[in-house]
Length: 417
Image (tube, rainbow, N blue to C red; front, side, top):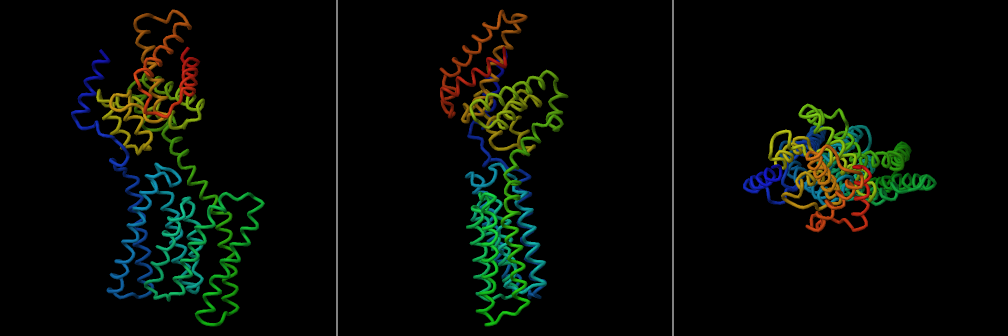
């Protein structure tokens, strides 16, 4: 009966057009959109502040808008591209942490520009902060977006532009070295960064005015020390924070107090217990083969979440996942539910599929008889179920090796005895 119901649901889903490859590129996530809009709004805001402080005429403001807004849009497209191609700190990020760093860097540059000479504006610090993304291109373009927004309305000369660009490029080049540096190397890097970021503005100042005052020298040395501190101490801290985003996100949706988990509890206590059991088994199987344990645990926990809204499990699961901003890889597991539309394409999806299939087989037989005849029969049932699925090619599209398949099977035997 259940099998017939699943076939009917699959037919409905296919008729609805869901058989296409349902990936993150086809879904819109409100948090991501909101973060990118915040990025654009912050850029326009600081541009307006700089234009106002420079008493820029309307025509000048329009010209600056024509210059800055396309660069801002290009930066947003770059962020999206880097995320989709896995070149950011976390492929499923909502960008918010980075946008906050970007706003802080902009605010710092804008505020300091009121009280220090133009050649001392700390574009290098902004670049080091934005380099926490782990991507040099984003660090450079983000820092230069801030610098150009400042330099254009104030009419800075070419030497200042060249200085800003050099500071951003050097920060992007050194950031990876600094992030990976050992403790004993940090003192040397601190000295190197301080020297470079003291020499650059001093050189530009001399070429512009052919003299360097004591106050300028002191300011330059002081800001170079602050830049070195931001590079050597703050950058690694921000980098770790951004790269912990994935862990924080999965911890949130796996927490027992998460709103969706409470919905599952209210829907059915038995369904909640089953989901938790599937989650734990998937986690242990993932750990056994070195797969993403958090992703497998979340996949197991929400594998049947579509049941909350009706029989079209996959369609409803995707709707729920979108509403809660689930990571793309987790949505992929939900889309591959029971292999009805698409067979598992990742190790984590294959693990959850195996565990769920075995649990369903055991449940079906348990309903026919009060309990299995023996532990040996249950073990043979698990072997038979997995071998049957493997023979039918359910895991051909996933990167599961035969050795990993056997390890997963051993975990299922141990956990479901």
